[in-house]
Amino acid sequence: MQVLVSGSSGLIGGLLIPRLRLVGHTILMLHRHRPTQGDQLQWDPLSGKIDWGIHSATPIDAVIHLAGENIGAHRWSAARKLEFRSSRIQVTSALIQTLLARPQPPSTFIGASAIGIYGEQGEDWIDEQSLPGKDFLAQLALDWEMASTPLTNVGCRVVNARFGMVLSRNGGAFAKMLTPFRFGFGGQLGTGRQWMSWISLEDCVSALIYALDESRLSGAINVVSPEPVRNVEFTQTLARTLHRPNLMRMPQWVLRILFGEMADSLLLKSQRVAPRRLLATGFNFSDPRLEPLMIRLLNNRSPTPVRNPD
Image (cartoon, rainbow, N blue to C red; front, side, top):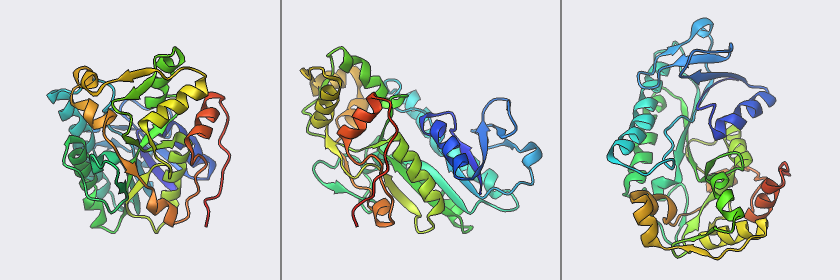
């Protein structure tokens, strides 16, 4: 299958590309800068323009669209929030219009989304049928997913991959946590009772490749482990795995002073999310439980595939 990928240099894309090649797919990567190799295409994200070069007549069977501004990198401002919307909604809309202008649109489109679409849910279990929330991140994710609707009108199978927190020692939130926890300054956030829905990087990439080939999947899929944990359990597990104390506590009011709106949206929100559609179609998680994953990550070991119970 010929697969076009955006966001190939990010945390997920960096592992996705070699894994796609390993299972036999041919890859074209969208890049903002001048290509340095034959499988790269120069792309202007805001206009959607792609310099297809020698690939102008190459059929694109599927697209995996991962590009989007990092929402956790800096404190939010009005300008930053506009960047989040532009890098997701405007960029996705422009890319899709470019794809629709080709003689044959792709048959499959997998777009990045986030479990932030569900908003604060307290103790309730969340699945793909749950209603969207009403905060900024929920509306952002909802509009992001709606941007891909024009492809469904031409018979393309569209999958919205709603990512939880992706755990890897090579980047993302988990990598940032390691330094303070190693020095004994890690600890729970707020009350620590908020549910965290996570997934290993390897399972995240496996889920995307699975969705690429699994024709029964369309619409939303929750890309999370089947075993969410409370924040206090997450922090205790990380401290125990590192053989460090877990004595620090960061009160809610301090987090709100430090991070503003981002504190409630990313750090204190409770989301107990289930990957029901992945499980229902037979996806197997290699890292279903948190502590074995943390041990593996901190010892640089590869995952061992396991079968989900029937």
